Amino acid sequence: SLTSRVDKTSYFSNGFSYHFQSECRYSSEDLKDLEYISRYIYNKLEYIRYNSTLNKFIGYTEHGVKNAERFNKDGSADQAHTDVDGYCRHNAELYFKNILWHTVEPSVEVLSVKSGSQRHSTMLVCSAYDFYPEGIKLTWLRDGKEVKTDVTSTEELYDGDWYHQIHSYLELTPTSGETIACQVEHSSLPKPKIYNWDPSMSDGDRNKVIIGTSGLVLGLILSLAGVIYYKKKSTGDN
Ligand SMILES: *[C@@H]1O[C@H](CO)[C@@H](O)[C@H](O)[C@H]1NC(C)=O
Image (cartoon, rainbow, N blue to C red; front, side, top):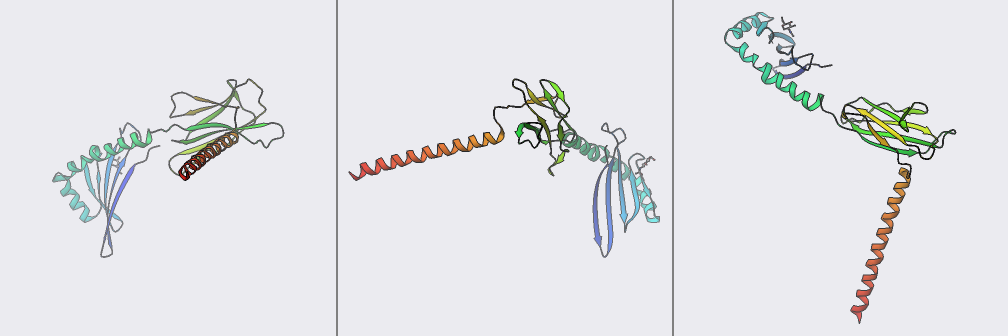
C-alpha cells in the first residue's frame, strides 16, 4: 500500500514554534488522486492549509482567514499548484523507479550440512541471500518433482540493510543418479530459477581442499625461495 510523503520544516523563536509541513498524498501508482497539501502551523495550531484539489488556501484562525484570502487573490495559490507536478509527481516517480519497482536477485547456494536426524543421512540447505524486496518462494525438487515432506524453513530474515535472506532445509537419503534442486521464485526473476545440488563435494570438504591447496602452494614457494637463496649464497661464497 502506498502512503503519502511528508516533509517538515520547523523554526523556534522566543519559545514559539513555527512549523511548515508539505504532504504529497496518493493511493495508487498511476497518481490519479495525487494531492498536494501544505500546512502552516503556529504553536501546534494549523492556521492555514493549501489544498491542491481545491487549488485554494483555507484559513482556520482570524489571522489565517485574512491571509488565505490574500494568497488566493495574489497568485500564491497558482504558484503553490506548480508543486503538484514539480515536487510531488517528480518525487513520487523517483520513489517508484528507485525503490518500489526496484528488485535485486538473490544469490543462492545449495549445500549439504550435518544431519541431526536418525532417519536420513543427509540434510541439504538452500540459502538465498541479499534479495529485495521481501517475498520469495523456495521449493525443493527431486528429479523435477516437488518435495513437501521433511522440509523446514526459516522465515524471511531482514538483514537491516534493505536486503533479506532465507534458508530452507531438506532431510533426505539421496539415491544415486537422482537430481536434487532448489527452485527460487522472486519478483527479480522473470521465471523460476533452478539451482542443482552438487553432491560431489560438501562445503566443508571444499574449504578443506582450498586451505590444503593454499598451504601446499605456500610451502612450494617457500622451499623454492630457500633453494634459490642457498644456491646464490653458495656461489657467492666461492
Ligand atoms: C482537499 O480538498 C478535497 C476536496 O474538497 C477534499 O476531499 C480533501 O479531503 C482535502 N484534503 C485535505 C487533506 O484537507
